[in-house]
Amino acid sequence: MPLLRKKSPENGTKTKILRRLGNSEKYQLAMYLLDHYRGTIVSCRYRLPYPFPFILQRKDLINMIHTAIAIAILRNRILQVGVANADSNAPRWVQLESVRLSNHIEFGFFDENDEDISKALDAMIVHELDAKFPELDKRPGWRVIVLWQQGIYFVELIFIFSRFHHDGMSGKVFHQNILEYLNNQNGPNAHHARQFIDGDILKLPKSSLRLPPPIEKVTKFSITPIFAIKTLWQELKPSIFHREASLAKWVPIQSTPSKTNIRTFTIEAPEVLKIRTACREHKTSIAGLLHGLMLASLASHLHEETAKAFKSITAINLRPLIPSSPSFEADQAMANYTTHMSHTFDEELVREMRPTLDLSIEGYPPLPPDALDQVWLVSAQVQREIQRKLDRGMKNDNVRLMRWIPDWKKQISRAARRPRVYSWFVNNVGEVDGRTFGTPWDGGGIQTWNIIRSQFVMSAKVNSAAFVISLVTTKGEELCVSGSWQECVMDDKLAHGVICDLETWLNQIASEEP
Image 1: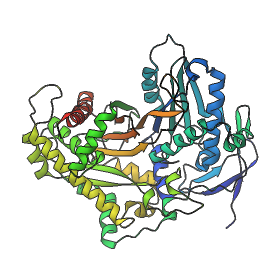
Image 2: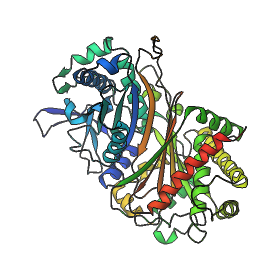
Image 3: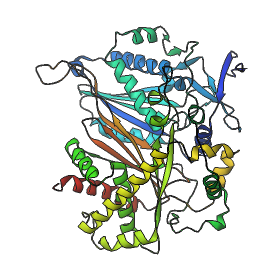
Image 4: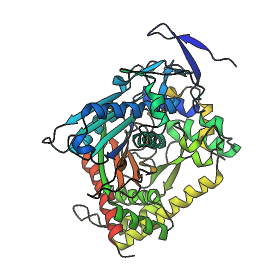
């Protein structure tokens, strides 16, 4: 079928229409248009090679970053596209002719005497996470903030993007592209990219590089009638039938304000190894453990009359299940290739856990032994559920049923009038491999760029889980855990208490003798 073309309203030239948005992409776009979800961030700290911290000039850094991002844009077509007819039921990806780099890349420079840029990083993430993406049909839905302090050995690179363009795993792919160029600045990719940079404009070439297909086009899903009926009934049934004890009625849905609160903590590399060892011994993973700890925390902060049971979500990366070919590598694709699954913690389980938690102690005490045992049992159960989901592959997955929703904005608005279903959501994008091998210098440093810290943050979801727990580990370095929630929907003291519990208990697990 020949590709359609339309006139671009901003310059009168013809713009190529690539394809319709897939089912998952349309859902994410509808969430964005309704202000139910704003943005996602994957931020990385790049260690400069010696002696860059002492001799690097601002203009040199700007040129390096511009070229690195240009390479990532040229390599990933999803970074080159806008969305036409976004408000319709048939939005389409359109190929743009160029990208104005200053619309998408911003630099923040600090003098040696300024305060630590870590504070600037935290403030920038809070601000950027909820900022909107203008002119969806004329600009790609992403931007980059670069922070550097003169004389400091690292650069912060914050990648902010819309979820209808791609998922959190794609943020890792983007940073791997950046790191690859920074360590090969005289290679063929760099020379190729510089041909298309004209001052502030990156001209986008006519390319055979294809836009990654939607998930429903790259693999086969199979659905049993019973699963389809049950799932669609849960999604479409009237509010009067939503009576499950696990509903998160303790945090009602409200559409405003569209503001995310964030609290982040890190676990150092030696402790991460100990936690992973403990998880293996208890037949679970760090993501599974976070579910167990979230259950213990909320059960300790909320009384039985308020919350008798809970329900949560895990994000599942489908890339390992997607067939690859010489022309398409799923694990390197920037696309929406994730799904999710839910976990129910029923009244009996929560009733058994609550007596093991001492609700009278002030502050953030360690977990009592009996409570920790319960956490490990819950975590192992969650991991078994995740493994069963992975073993089923593409059978009975919600993604396949999304095609039956003709108007996602109407469906999401309808769902927002019901009780909240999920109390928390755990999304682990895994490990960022930021290591490269360089030549040691006399001072013990290395002569290559490396990623030494990563952070993954998602904005609050108005009608989804009350808490969003986002995890990322930098290989050989620390684990970063970010908790986010919508402002005003719950008591900030409760929200901060839950995240403090996670930090306290993860460190407790790391400190216990094997």
